[in-house]
Image (cartoon, rainbow, N blue to C red; front, side):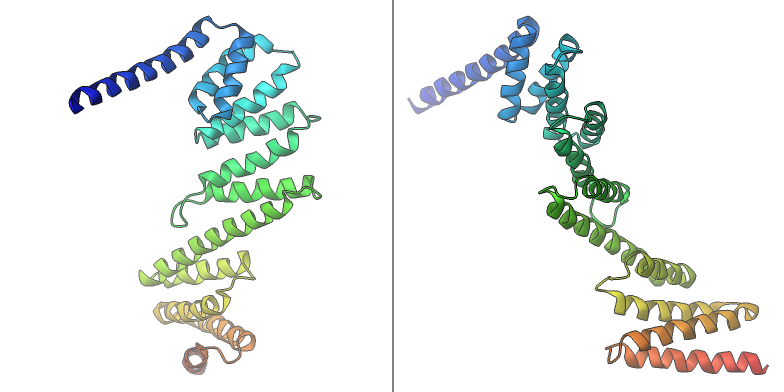
Length: 269
């Protein structure tokens, strides 16, 4: 009895699925442009993204040059975004903003360009090209719409993206140091400080710059040591001037002491 009941429920569910598919296929193949457009909007509102995209694509040509095309183009970009096709949605939102410069929807489209790239931003250990693009687009939005309600959100997202890029830069410097590539570690940590001068990790990074620079000088050929010990001293002195009472104070003072001693030995020789 229970098995029969489950079987009937399964059949009913299957028929329901077939019916939904048939409805979509019927409107796609036989519906007028007006019917397909209305159904596409309905599908987008209910987050049936692929169906919405398919139907918007099928009516774009029919409304070319007509007032409805603006809304279709905008909603088509959202249908792509809805599916997670963020690269294409960024393209179409940007294209919309260019094509319809006087549209009331341009501001939202411009924001969505940046947000599409933001959604493509990966974990910090991976390539951050899309993160950088998101920052650029959010900053462009702020510059273009300084009074927009979305400015605060853009600033928050920019901070999040920059934090991720900073993590990436720190991880790269740390990796170089662990691999004993002290030259690359010195340069990488130095670039981090240039790109993120207000970093909350600046104290530790300046310590690592001095440490990596010292190790680099140690491993250098004799003709390069004087120059690199001098650079180490500068890094150490900058650290001590900026971070009084730091937990790394004694380590940096030892680096400065040893570097100065070896520099003097080279000069005297």
